[in-house]
Every structure is written in C-alpha cells, then in structure tokens.
Length: 516
Image 1 (cartoon, helix red, strand yellow):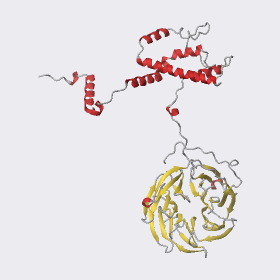
Image 2 (tube, rainbow, N blue to C red):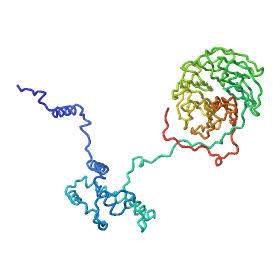
Image 3 (tube, rainbow, N blue to C red):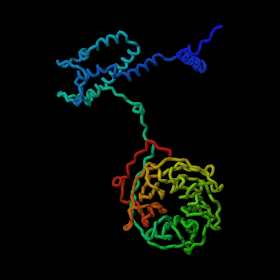
Image 4 (cartoon, rainbow, N blue to C red):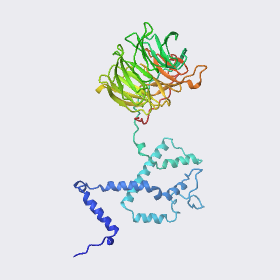
C-alpha cells in the first residue's frame, strides 16, 4: 500500500495551493463560471490611463526639465534644476534633449520593445498635447496671453502655466447644483423703545390680554402687576403668592386669569373682582409652566415633580396626570387639534400627548440639553423647541393622536441657555437667552437676521442681563421681554428702515445640515 506523505514533507506553498483550490471549488457557482468575456480594448485603455497618471512624472521627468530650461520658462526665484547644461549657447529646440547621457539609447530601446499599452499611453499624451496647444492658440488669439519682447519672467511663467497639464478632481467635474434652501425675506430691524421698572425682583412671566389693551407680569417679588399696553402705566398689583410667580395665562373665553409659582400653588383670578376664586392643589413641588386649552375648559400645569397635570377649570379636579418625563417640565403649549398638549422637559425630550387617551403619543429626543421653551406657529402646523444646544423646527401631524417630524435646526447657534421663544404672524421668531442676548430669526429659512444684547438698568450688575420670557402682542408689531434686571422692555419695528439703509445679517445657505 502507498504510504501517505507526512505533514512535515509537505511544503507551505503546496498547502496554500491546496487551500486555494478547495476554496475556489467550494464557492464557484454557475453565475461565476458563466461570466461574460472581458472587453480587452477597455482593459488596455484603463491600464494605460492608470499607468500614465501614476508614472508620468517618472517617465518624462528629465525631458520635462530640459524642455523648461530650453524655452526659458523657469520662474525667476525657482531653484536651478539638477541638470548639467553646457556653457555654450542655449541649445536649440531640436537638440534640447540630445546632450542628456543615455536618453537616446533609452528612446531607441523603447521603440524596439514598445507594447500596445505603451503605444496607447503615447496616443493619450499626444491627444492631451494637441488639446493644450489648441487652448493656448485660442487664448493668444483672443488677447488673453501677451508675451512681451523684453522677456518678462512673469509672462514666461504664464506661458509655461498654459502648457502645464491640469489635474482636475472628480468634484470639479460634477456640476454643482444651486442651493435649494429658501432665502430669507428682509425684515425690519427691531429697536427698544420703552423700559418699564416697577418690580422688586426678577420678572419671570408675561402674558398679553386677548383684547390687546393690557398685559400682566409675574415676578420673584411674589406680585402680579397689570400694565397698560399703550402707555406702559401700572394699572393694578395683585398679591397672594408666597413665592416666585413663574407662569401666567389669561383666558380668552372667561374673565379669568391663571397663575402658578414656586409655592406649588395654581390660582384662578376673577378679573371682575380682582380676587382669587379657585385653587388647584396637587403639585408636589414648584410649578414652572402653565397653559390653557383654546377650546376646552381645562388647564395644564407642569413643574419640578416631572408631571403635567390637567385640571378641570370649574370643578378644580385633576382630570389626569400626564407622567413620563424624567426631570422638570419647563414649558407647555396647547392647541385645538392633535397633538393637543406638548411639553418640554429638562430631560432634553419633547413629548406630544393624546389628550383623549391620556397618554404620550410621540417622544422627540433630538435635543441634547434641557428644553426650556416651546412656541407654536400662528398659521403653520409646526412648532419650535429651544434648548442650550440649538433651536429646532418640527412639523406636526394629527394621525395616531399626534406626531411630529424633525425639519431642520436654526442656522446659527445662540450658544446660551434659551429661556424664551415667541413667533409672530410675520414669520419673525425671537429667542431670549440667559446671558441677555435677544436674537431675531426668519422662521422659514432659520436665518438669524438681527442680534441684540439687552442693557441692564442703572444700578444692576452686568450678570443680571437675562431674558426670562418674551411674547408678541396680538398684532405682532410689539414685543415684550421680561428680564433679570427687574425691568420690562418693549420693542417695536423701525418704521424708517429700508433694505438699503438697514440690511439684515448676511445669509449663508447651509452646506451640510445635521439631523441632531
């Protein structure tokens, strides 16, 4: 019987060949065995182009240097090439290559052993040279290339650059499409025209009366003040809270005003008697946000107990508790259609609630920092959410109790904690920061067209420049901001401004928008 070869007698090469053969037979299928035949001219052309692009400098290095020296096309400050040029007169064009040792022998050897690929490379070179020559002739005929008789080195360098081969990247060959990002329309700049001081502490909240005649502010001095919108005069001061007043809302269907504060209390004020007529008990900690439903007699409040509580306005009963957030509920907005309630929390999420089912319909996790402000657009079915990382726009849908899809970020980062957000009918968005910065945006494009910095009132420290809340009046022509320097500031559009005299900040369309 035949004796099997021992493993030590089999070479590594033979083992590799066996393994390769076994792998090929294992994975070979009918599709790989019946491949179409390769197109030999295409393969040769591809190889020729690759060889020409990779080794053209090596193949024509000496000839290119001598050609530059012979035509006097070297720049004035360029170092001398490492080529021995005779001390006699400048070589002529025909004999510029004859004095290089071994060049003629290499050329004759190349002619004897030239292959199809080499001939193809030479054909490609000839085609490039003819195209470059044609371009140069056209430029000379049009007057774009002028060579002076004095032999200016800069002009000679220009001639050399015209003959120099250009390597274009694939990005240069692809036609660049125009940006489809909507261009912002021009907005009139906003200017400060009134500063109201009357509170003795931070002014934390503001709301405008539906009749557009007065507005109310809540402060850290535990008072609620009613101001005349036209003149800025104080009308009334309401007391009753024992901590900061953080939220206010005036009903447009009842003569009621609602307030909440860090004392865990939610109060209902009768504006005909200017007295508290109802209390809503149930919050376990300070209340930060308050909102009224535009059609139903319900009230939504949220605070540090991480829950949004829905109250029956008349019976003072807690209808439901919308729980799900992991941190303080910082802002609440409400609308007629689903999603009827939206909450922003310091856990960096925005939740959209199905009020009929009493549960969360959608959770948006696009933010990286706590969400302190939400704002609904007056006409479009969309909203904005503000955080320390960015201001984001979402489009809403009523299906399945309410949903939202991320649209885009604002094009500039405010780089501060954004406490206040408001949108007007004219697509103007205003955002107020913890550092006193007040930025104005175009809603459609997300472009910031004006940046303002609030000035603190005399006697306050610079660190007290902070915007806590902002709102437009019912016409959208006046803006009210309440700030940490205990003042209320009122802004209006500059009627004398035009696009020529007061241009907005320059708009740069985004190149790559990030999803988060």
